[in-house]
Length: 87
Image (cartoon, rainbow, N blue to C red; front, top):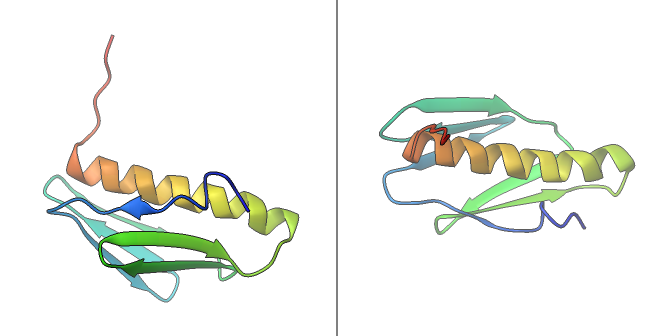
């Protein structure tokens, strides 16, 4: 299993995540983001924790597993804390 993909994503207070069919919608106090995802990846939200898993062990699905987990985590950070760049 993917090292990144198997880690759970914790949803902070003030952020809502809606998972419908193949769309993940993340709403926070800063913005609202959405993303389409592949049918071969399963995304489940329960008790303010999101778990991403894959249905098969093909090379493409292993790559998408970690990718979607990272993208969803970045969406949550973006709508809650916003973007900042330190020099």
